[in-house]
Image (cartoon, rainbow, N blue to C red; front, side):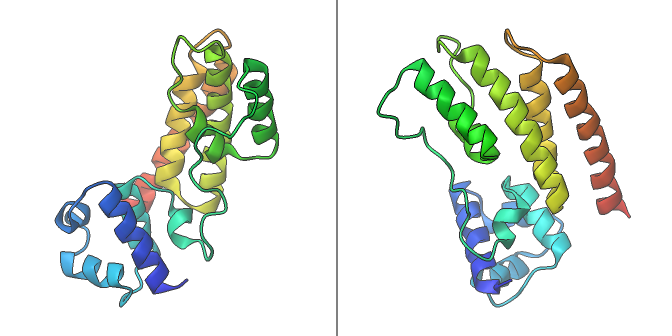
Length: 186
């Protein structure tokens, strides 16, 4: 892990959220320590990284990646055919390619007037759940918690509401809360 890259990513995320260093550090670390981390002169511990990722609302894996993110935040795909059939085909393709984060970024908060509203909710539910599992496996518990909550919400909505997926997401959510409370209290 390169301290300069991690520091740069933390600073970028903080500035993108329009947060001051004082707002980020809270009672966990000092502002001076955050300044040293952002400048690359100090390498934070895993516990500090997890805290910063949580406060900044980004996956821990983004801060720790050796290379730039393999999957940049996705805008709507560049479709030449903007038909619902083409969009649905892209959603299926991305899901099968395990591009869960890109899929959730692209589909976030679909409009109820969208002809694929119900389908997008179903894809959001499944992709959010799968992303939560990946984040849990990588140790990014706060981000996994966020995605499992989204999965639960999306799975309970729309024509294709899925009670089984909602239950799985809620079980994952409960387990993550327990894991996080052990991490921060023990």
